[in-house]
Image 1: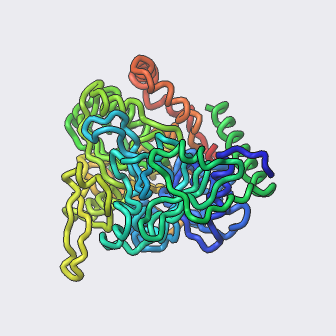
Image 2: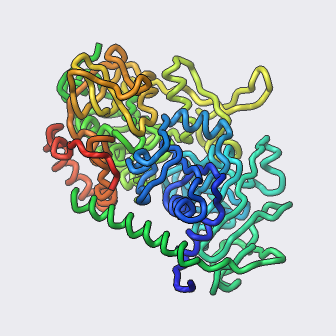
Image 3: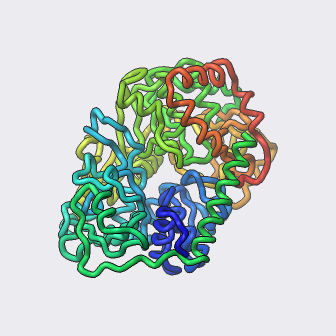
Amino acid sequence: MTDFTPTEMMTIAASRELSNDDVCFVGIGAPSAACNVARLTHAPDITLIYESGTVGTKPDVLPLSIGDGELCDTALFTVSVPEMFRYWLQGGRITTGFLGGAQIDRFANLNTTVVGPYDHPKVRLPGGGGAPEIASNCGRIFITMALSKRGFVEKLPFITSMGHGEGGDHRERLGMKTKGPTRVITDLCILEPDAVSKELTVVSIHHGVTREQIVENCGWPIKFASRVIETPVPSEVELATLRDINARTRKAHQASREAA
Amino acid sequence: MAKIVPLAEAIGDNVRDGDTVAMEGFTHLIPYAAGHEVIRQGRKDLFLVRMTPDILYDQLIGVGAARGMKFSWGGNPGVGSLHRFRDAVENQWPRPLEIEEHSHAAMANAYEAGAANLPFAMLRGYIGADLPKVNPNIKSVTCPFTSEVLAAVPAIRPDVTIIHAQRADRKGNVLLEGIVGVQKEAVLAAKRSIVTVEEIVDELAPPSPNSVVLPSWAVTAVSHVPGGAFPSYAHGYYPRSNAFYIGWDEIARDRDSFTAWIKENVLDAGPEDFARHAGKTPAKAA
């Protein structure tokens, strides 16, 4: 299939990172769509966990919030929020955290707190929520967000959650044993931290996208790996699954609007 | 023993100007009706605490009832910003708002520490994050056994915690189920507590021996307010109105439309107006 949008490509590429063995802490929005496409295609036994306490959830429509009733109704079980963060996340039971963000830097640090100075922000964003500890306690982190100059910035005004910090072995120096961000999936390409410097580097370019487009949409001089592949285009099954769940979600939200 | 009283009396007796107030609910069972009663009674200088301040705290901040807020995620879930919260932080309207910002893990641990009557909570948290640089209430402790350095935050001890639950019996024992969030901890950490419920029943009939029950002797006041969690939801009763959350964005974006909404739906309304949202249907989110 070559008839797809960049956002669809991003979600499907992100979904392919997950497997049946993953126990995945799911962020709302793009990560949630990707995780559920994975569950409905190649990873039916994946365990999806939302920070509201729902474990092993199988939503039929994508939740608007992190705690929609749909998540609890379809979960294997639901725990309190302290239990979620203490036993399951801090306890080291989560293999993969899937995050989005407002801004990211070249070492995959994320900002969802403020634009401008913290005490007098130009834009006050919602804040970190679970992200600071998801980023440090999950075995590895995937990040999905659209590539843009506003989002991929030279310097973050605030580090909400640490990726690779200043690069190199910064995580190890702070005592972290988890891998941190291992893949960043955008609407134009896929990035991976360089093995040594940990700087995000393009490893796969989506069909029809040029290197110039990627350079133009990134706020720092982005590097390309020595071997860059083309991201396989979405299969019919992947695309149909994504479009179906998006259609079900839109319909459900519409119904709720009419009932309100 | 909990007193079963009308909502206006529960708020009037237990929420005072200047109090530290936690109205908890992790997307589910958010005590909207009780929060509106706090606004109607004109409480001021409140220090609000909540992990996920959403529309209800946007409303309390927008009317100027709060002097400060302790929180870990302040947005309209899946929709975007809380415009009244942003206006207070960015433009000090209608008054400056002191903020104490944490992560979810820290807030959850801090409530648990409060419930456990401990002075502080510790966690393996905030590593490499900037919040400790701007929040002096994030400190560290060194484990006396392993020498590991861990994050430490003060326990949360609200003057009053307000939650919504599915039902209570006539003695004031309370049952909550579904996404239970941090409500049990928030009630047990507080000096006083108010629980609004969908139903008051003869027999509580907890569905499991391990159900989340708050006994009457751990709760200060119970009020019967059907629909009182709308536009959030009550598992087993009515679904979340995602449409309302989406629609709030436009209402709250503008100071005048916000103020008009508050007058019509809060100041000129009452707890009984929530009843039209009540129902007993499977809580399948729309």
